[in-house]
Image (cartoon, rainbow, N blue to C red):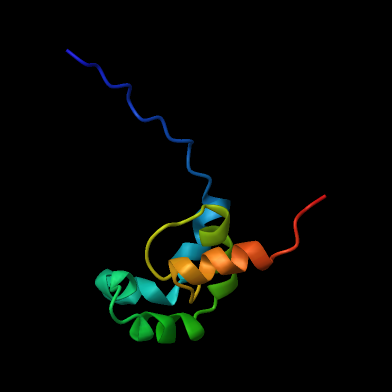
Length: 88
């Protein structure tokens, strides 16, 4: 019998995640942000979002593999990650 170790997540720190409370996507269907065939609707929502920069930075730092975050698709985030200057 195989025993799996429980997943241990870090405690949430509200200051780190509070920006999500102000995200425009909160009032939209989550499926719009994970539609691989048509991401235009999600990107339009992101363009008018007051936390687009925080969202984009989070998704790039977390290497978020799916969905539209900060107005960028996974492939766009990957390109953006490679174009950013690296810290010394």
